[in-house]
Image (cartoon, rainbow, N blue to C red; front, side):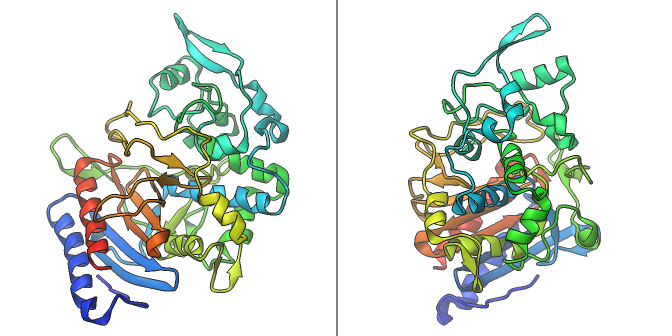
Length: 396
């Protein structure tokens, strides 16, 4: 384990705070609630806590250098990429998707099935970039809507994790702008960035986000991180973890900004600190303050997050947040505070293998807690996450 207190809480509390946070991580691994864990906190000025527990893979202890498949933590990076072009006046949140990517017009709304034949109709509304960013485009993953895996089986449609360009053409399950539905929307948003800017999305992100923020351990391919890459574990019916093979597709036809990145806890914390610093880090500005304000505000046009009922329990538990939870252009947005935990206006999201983060601007706080396990948000991991977050706020 390792603790770095670059900028600390009050000196008299420092050792107790670090000890308490580390104890949460140690207890979680000792109890088998997580296979291992890396957690860090920071404020706008620097790192305030770093800890780890357990083995990231057999015989290799988890630490700050551990590399993760961050899956949907990639989404915020993709949204920031689009926000950079919005900030420069190249597109707007209300730009219709089909104006940039005409293939969107080929998508229909799936209304059901006539035997083995999908019933599709034309959408009644036009999807915009705001709909993509807030997961109100009408597109859902096969893990969250039972009609989608049925459609994929009947038509042979590939999953977006295949890396095939054709996989983008998921059917819509609702008209754009009418309901929250979690799916490959940010993959489309990344394709918008490519079409408008001209650079491939990995090159755009490298040059416009990762390099300016000093995120040297974040990559679209794991090659230089292989010797630090952790193992994925899935909990079986007996409650024990077993190895499980899961990763973004290597050298795909397109990099999906919903899932493509590998990163480390310190690197992703630099990205979160950029948000706390309203668009810049260490003197390198990637977004204007005005753009950040727009990016972190509610952009759902009166809609709210809707509970996600899992179609694939081995992959994910159900996902629920308090009624009234919204989504900004890049993050889930908590409109109400949680006593002893995050404040109203906090932002968060996660990757499917239980890599999680939150940002609490009102407390000048960002934090990550990361392991590599399935199911997503299973009860035992959630217990660890809550204990860690409570310990963080108890130390402020």
